Length: 403
Image 1 (cartoon, rainbow, N blue to C red):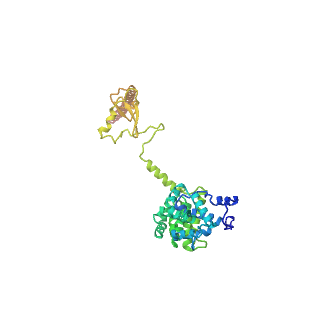
Image 2 (cartoon, rainbow, N blue to C red):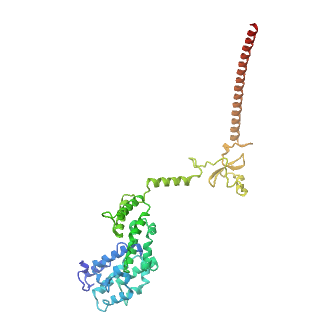
């Protein structure tokens, strides 16, 4: 028994201690509920703790049905009938509790959900009083309808069957498990249980892109298949084990860290993606193929006309167009990939380029002259050899005649 529920006598709000009790009971949750289905289970758990703490449990039994377990089986007529038992003209503790529960719930939802709630006032306001249990049922209905359109048992089972694909929408195993639990709980509220959850959870966890987590889940699956001691028995146990592994990896900063093999694959993909891109000098300039200046423009005169337009006085003589750097060449009277100082064309008017060509020609002439001198020397040597051979042959002939 908690202090808030120690007595069921009506509170006297003229007494400071009773006012403090009221303010404590209606204080908002630390995190306001945003109306998301995956957070519904956590929200209901927090509300139920507040209900137990301040002795509101009695008003949450609608007939023989407990609101937190069987809200799917409770309709508006039953809620209104239950409220009528304590919402008479006489002030009762149950009526005060129902009002306090209403205030607490309104304080604990965010502005977006509040705007939806006030549009459904007829679902939780009976006569002149708003009713806490009816408001909770309204919130649950709004969340389920907004998520599924019609949270029937069939639709909830469809959502559960789809969890192996749904897990791709979550990076957190804790949030994914919250989504699964919410759907399972909603189905149980209709008096139905989903008994095939284990295979679906194993399938979902095995699709997570984390090698370490996959190995852990595989070990649990092997133990389950062979019935080993301490193996997983039900879906809730598997979800808790998966959450513990996820939290451990998050603590070690190893969640979804690529393995060595995955890192190599990523590196190879990056190399393939960069293959074919133009090389860049240290100064950031491109290194185009001189024999392939711009294939995309070569057969399109309207796209190459700009190359013959000389820069005006004061304008840059080097520009960037597309992937390449272009330089205005006075010799070619065109934008080219080569710099003017590197031009090798004919009829050059650029002084530096002309000087470089003359030096190159002089070197070539000198080389040719050298090669001629070497060839002439070799020929002379050959003549000398042939002369000696001829003289020796003559001597031998003369010696032969003497004999």
